[in-house]
Image (cartoon, rainbow, N blue to C red; front, side, top):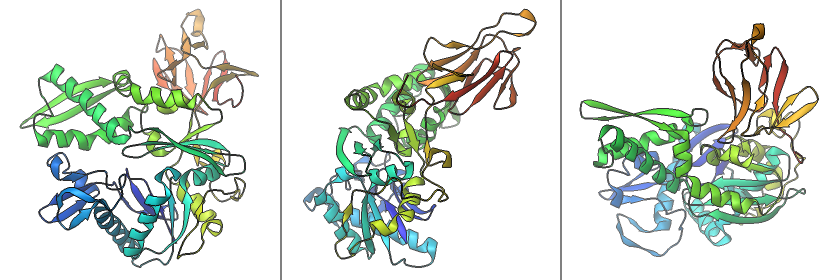
Length: 428
């Protein structure tokens, strides 16, 4: 049995925890045929007029505005994409599986889901069950939560209650990953112009290279305050540095919109791995992160509650939060299904809230005064020292420096005692 995690930023088919096929929902018309997924993304900036990014988001059977090879509608392009993905998964397996569960967000809507199921049937994909993505996420975490996910063009917000049922589902924004990429590209291109006089957007080839590098650069900001970025132009290599704070300012409109709407409700927040890849958002929201394999693991564990009539599968929107076995490898945060954010610094029996003002830890040896603090910067706890001679240990390893990003569960030892990064839920 396979599971398809449906999200147009990356459609993924997995067998257990092994991802067999993974492709973004992008198509590029070359002559009378389509390049699909990553192959299309790798040329999308070279020929933007021939690129299609919204065929899953705007799935319908209305005629396209312009001719596109053998495709007359968005549904036709979606068929080519899903067929290619399925064939790739079957090649990896060396066989054609007899069952597939489809995990799809409730916000996609019943009308588009019906069309998606029709396309799957035309591709010969044996869908035997449909389940809401947020309900699977909550089952993996084992707790009621507000689950946030992002697609190419939208941010989804779903609330799962204590019974494991989807109680509400809405969109926080229609600015998705595509918007985030465009904002980041504008910032980086302007920085190249300001520092090197090289404009990567002047030619399609250099714009494509910037686009190709961008996902890794965004991931690099997870722990780095500044990143060095290099792009070639002819025989030259152009290099700049971009501060994390600059990128956060660029993405501020989306972050503020999400935060404002979330403040209207209460409850723990869990981000998909896709949304957590945006720097600073997880820390800003105090959210947990769902691992990229948790959807698949919980889907396999709970498959008997999901599988229904293959002719007309029921869209399952409730799963027991306690149904996953303790030894299944998912469920509780300690198993790795959910990575949570630190909120406090624990010393002895006292838990101190992390703050931008900082929490002082210790002074240097031999009476030498030296400020050592844990400070909240851009939503992340950071260990800062005014001297590199202070004797500190992080998670048992000796450390001498002046700056270190910390994570939930990290332990800092010094002359004054032992400090732990912890998470306090439901209190301050």
